[in-house]
Every structure is written in structure tokens, then in C-alpha cells.
Length: 235
Image 1 (cartoon, rainbow, N blue to C red):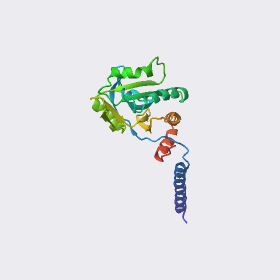
Image 2 (image 1 turned 180 degrees about the vertical axis):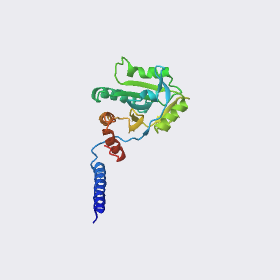
Image 3 (image 1 turned 180 degrees about the horizontal axis):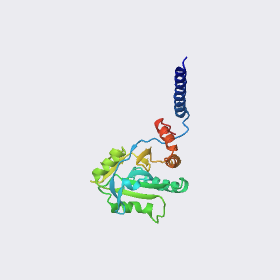
Image 4 (image 1 turned 135 degrees about the horizontal axis):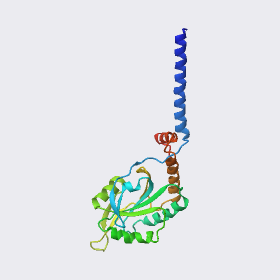
């Protein structure tokens, strides 16, 4: 065999070895999943609304923060799922147990913007925000009814509708399924909790996963996390 053919033969062997190593690495990563990530479910909706203090709040205000959303309305009582109390409790859990060095926020979106003006939301929010010295911000937001429906129904896939209240004349109540949504600092939905009995340990665990990913979003480590998303390495 000529020297040229030997040289070509050796390079082919080296190339095949490198290809085999890459395939083995990919298969090993997919099987053993050394890095776990929460799924990137979808892009969270953009919006521009008003909070309980009459201040403008947009989706951009929560960039860079881990934000937990819930959906309710001020006249929510009786059989209406009480998710706002759960938000107050998870706020305390975040302050106590969530990793430091990360900005957190809570957002409560009204499903009844016709009646829930900023003033009414202020009265509704007052018991939860009284003597507020929490490091976790909390906004109760309202806005144009059609835009709220686009944001809630189109962006967060939560269906709701008004129904006449029994024996209440022209009064009505809002029917909806309870839902909490965790959005990361890039504006991507990372977890959904379709329940009124929020599991605080589950939320804190999800926050821990996101915190590790955030802390490794720069440098060489980010490629491992992108691979984890590619191979759906979910907890």
C-alpha cells in the first residue's frame, strides 16, 4: 500500500472514531441525563395593564424575574377556587426557601376587568399587601376586557366565562379552572399547576431547577443545558 493510501486510511479511521465518540456521547447524554431542566412550554404573552395602585405594568417589567401567575377576581367567593390565599402562602415559602440572588415576582390577573377597576383591586389586594415589606413583589393587574381575554385565554390557555348568579338578579360570577403558571426571566412558560391546592414543595423544586439553569446560562455550561432541552431531560 502506498504512503498516500496509508495516510488516507489512518485519517478515515480517526474520522470514524471521532464520529463514534460523538454518537456515544449523545446517546449517553440522552440515556443518563446528567443535566435536568424544566421544559420550555411556550412563550408567555405580552401585555400592558394597570396594577392595584393605578401604575402601569407590562410583561417587560418582569423580565429577569421568576414570576408566578394566578388568575381570579375580587368577587371570588363560595365555590370559586381560592388561589390568592395560596399565592400569599407561596410568597412566604419563596422568601424562606428559594435560592438567594434571584429576583422573584407574583402577578394576580383579574378575570373580571369590567368590575375590577384598579380601585377595587386595591381593596381586594389590601389584606395581602398590608404592612408589606416582602422582597417578592406582588401586582394585581387589570385592563381592557378584550385584551385581558386575549392574554389569559390566548397566552395562558385558561378558559373562563361569566354566568348569572342564582337569585342575584343581574349579578354574575366567573367560572374558571384554577391555574398557576411559572414564567422565567426570559419570558418563557416553564411550569403549569392546574390546581387550587398548590404544592409548595413542587414549586420550590422547580424554582431550584430554574436557578441552576440561570446560573449556568453563560459560558460553556450553557451548551449542556441546551442539550438537556434538546433531549427533553425533564425531572
